[in-house]
Image (cartoon, rainbow, N blue to C red; front, side, top):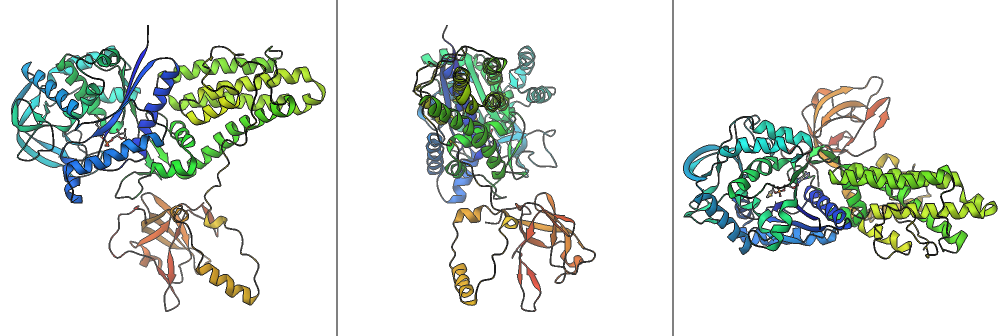
Length: 640
Ligand code: ME8
């Protein structure tokens, strides 16, 4: 029987442009798509944009534009981004499209006719960022726990969906299908939400307040609540109710979402489906959040990561690999460009890149680029290569199935490591002189191992995979992952240069070369002139992480006239040793807002650890003047 696989991302709000978080979810969905295609399954991959609701109207108003124009613009940005990242979605859906409007109205009418929608009044605390009410137990310090913002109290007459009615059914369903919501921590979180009675879901907004939405088919004075509208995209996308695709794919539906939208997907959505008489989706796969430099990514902190910039700097495959490998699926992760560079150099330039270039070059050198026949496994080492390749395939498949993508990558890298060690231990350069028979076996096992690696990285790094397979004389995918020995002897192997040229680490100020030797006077003047016209690229400046900080502690350093040790809040607290002791008394410093460079490599000054640098300049009286702000800044905000 033909296997089907249906994968979705959240549809993203069009109030802002795409960022790293959206890219993560969508790349993961693409990786799963490619993986299931390799298994020969029929895959449908849906992504798109969520365009109705208060949040869009509010943002558009603030920008002096219309909701429609804002939606068109930002939806276009999402749509254009995906091909740049080798994301191959089957459809890009917009909730303003006519087929979606029809499906939402049909479902509303159906649930209304069944008696599960009623008219009533409700007052509650609403977060516009989340577009939902929060219950007393969810509210933290009077604020939305996701956006950390004050909630708005809203009371109005509206239509309600009888969500509470389906709570017992949902609890049973989750208990009967332990991986319905995964990883387990989120399943437990959902069961926690279901321990208390649920409020029925308010599914309308009066047109007197909001018109940017889908009109209720049974009351023209109201539009549909944005979440009720948005979730239904997963049905519209595959042609519900009559489309052939719906019948094929719905039973295989996998949603991927971030932890911020767990409740709508794990509570609203299954109960809505139940009321409509549709089977629940198969799995909800929930991932954690990317933080940036240890802080929550947010516009106000100015630390929103632009995915295109990263792709342009490091290449699409390296960027995709980093996202998949770095984040433990389900947990939060910290993004930093340093970490990306480290992974790039260690895993890609060193482990994978070296393996491919040294192996293909050896075949070129010793066998004129023609793969010799060495399929017979002769020694323990040959067997280790073969057995590892076959074992890794199984392990990798199991991990991909259960969405443990980061450990699936670890499996592949364990094979890469075995192959690199195999080459080192076999020393082909010596065999070339004294054991041609053994050299053939080693070359064959090495190249066949490389083929396994190339096939396994295909979902995450499609271009690199293609390039390696082409170098092995394989235009398309081989997909013989159950056979070690599928690579035919006699194929032409093309020698490869570095697939991933090493990337220099960001140059730190304290790593700059020592002062050049003093120059003669004339040259000095020339150098000064040069310095003045020494223009830098904006990217060079962007490497410097400058943040607004607040000094929380200051103390003089004994035996030093100049040095003070500061504790500075820059989102987190860092210790900085600064040479401003002759210009400021410690007590004068506490409470000051200053500009701090936060991505310097830690240094020790007179034995004191210093993890940053503050900015100062010269005052006319010969003392130093700290760079500060003309009004109170957000502590931890990026200076740009
Ligand atoms: O919630 N780290 O849209 P949205 C990881 N329209 N992933 C992140 C992230 C981060 N820091 N920030 C965002 C909506 N995401 C609704 C969805 S679905 C029927 C309606 C990702 O634009 C993650 O997938 O706020 C998260 O769930 C989603 O973007 C929220 O996107």
